[in-house]
Length: 339
Image (cartoon, rainbow, N blue to C red; front, top):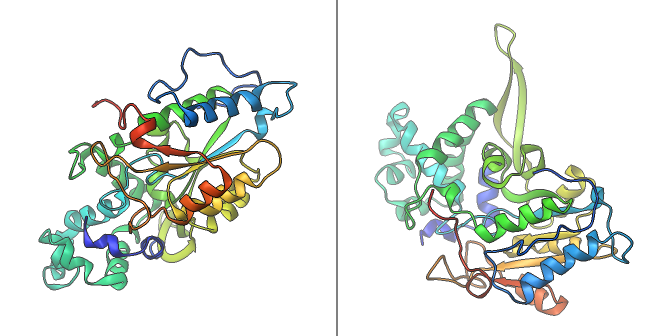
């Protein structure tokens, strides 16, 4: 793992911010032979399907009207892989190399010099200040449309260092099935991520079936401007607007969604407050953690990891009876078949 992983998630988010399918009408749960075919039978799979059955059974004690069936999902480590470091960091590092010809001074300026030489370990010694400079150089000073275009181009060409697949193919097949299953039963699915909202929105609908207006994330201040010929533009700036991590997640849910979710999925301590918030509401509730315990097919990490640390969350799940999804035990496959 890169030593950039030693930077805390909040450090990464602050640095990032410094620059910046269809809900059906309410009805009984759909009868399906197996709505979650990539899941092994067991307590966790049953917890999900039984919960959906309860809240969609009209006339039942736990019935929830379709408009109140809100499901929230963390992104990094919950819907797609997050190792050896957050994929948005990989995007930033690749952008440094892509725009280096416009910055000849980077040949002698750290951490850019190290990144251009492929020496991430040395680049990491620049610490938070260095990461801030990388994010500032790669995420600000452009229109939101230009940034979206850069992100989409990157998703088409970049490859993960271990799996040699596009990053957007390293999504979890079992979680894709959960989202589809929930939507088929009248739920509206939202992403609530600490990652950058502008980084996720260009591709989430294609990959997850979640439209951009149902994506929440950390954000920088965006400014409205008119060009000399009167064309309106939105410019990404270097001012922090909102960090959608930890306690920021339930706050963001209230501000962005305005309804109390009834089911939530996370994978780290950064999701703890979201799961506490969702599980603490009235009526039927379900909070679940994805536990990375499959080093052979993906990665194994939890309490001591700098990326996706799951420590307090594991303890709280045990104390409150939240289902913990074992990637090794509960999932037949991790990623979709190669496209």
